[in-house]
Length: 389
Ligand SMILES: Cc1ncc(COP(=O)(O)O)c(C=O)c1O
Picture 1 (spheres, rainbow, N blue to C red):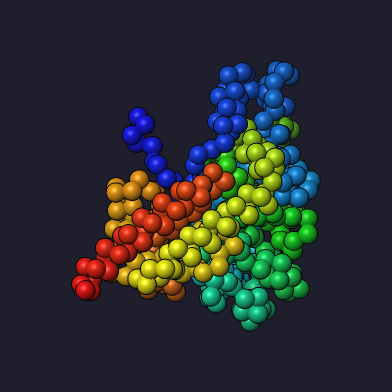
Picture 2: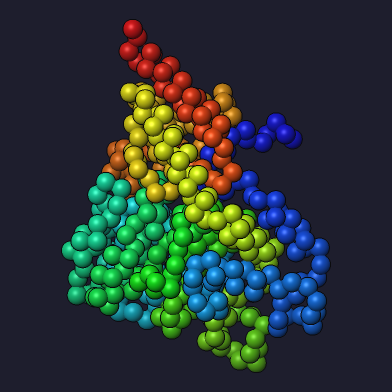
């Protein structure tokens, strides 16, 4: 039903929409023929979508060799595999670092291990919109073994100094897992050059794939113990999980229509050019911030984001009410509330949550203008009710 399709979709940091036509087409195409994949079928005609996706991600993230790209269900799943796999066999009670910018996909697994007394956790605060490398250095203890942190904040749109932080961590022999859920597909990432041990991505956001896909790049497979076991289509006589990559971590039947979509999303970004997508998004994000700032009752929490995200509140209105009005009166879809990053909100808005606009490759200038006018109109109405002239 056309009536149910959002008119202006500004919730791309949750899940990007629309997907490029090539992405949608390949999902159907991949399901229209028998699957081809080595080790699991005698069929030799057709596309090996899993390998195509692995090679696409390896190329796109400069992450070699391709076999060190592991596919999973999403970023959350990947973070769980990596955190659990790293802690397996480690000394009970070792010290782990994360940050107040992080998503519950990082915070909840780590809190669970803290609750079980398996780790001691320190959460490093952010300053402005970023975690300072010197704050990380100050938090390191002799027993610190691991740091897990986001590359880009899903609330503030700030890209973190992964190079600076990773260099400090590696000087101290600390393992570094980076959550790239908000950066992959939005900014160029070259893992060849970054001091990062494992980098997590998700398929359904900036990479323009569909939900149910994601994964991670792992520099040294031996650093992470497998935590799931099962069929791989290889070395089947052995009852032990293969040590080889990616079978060490990939079990069961792949979501190959999803991986076909992920490869098509990556190809689409490569063809358009990630820098040209980012440049347009940056101009539109700056425009929105400039326009919203014209209303005295709007508080913007991220004046200069690196990612196409704008976080704000309107004085005198609950963020949920603003979202409701934008959807119902203007057909503008955003996200409101805590954005699964509760510690960010404790710092910026007293834990109340905020409204988030997040743009994509497909957002038009006209949509930004309509959104800015709608938000200013809501703010103007609220203002006249709060303080009548
Ligand atoms: C920073 C960050 N990490 C992790 C996630 C979880 O991503 P996924 O839905 O792929 O598990 C999100 C998305 O909501 C996110 O913004």
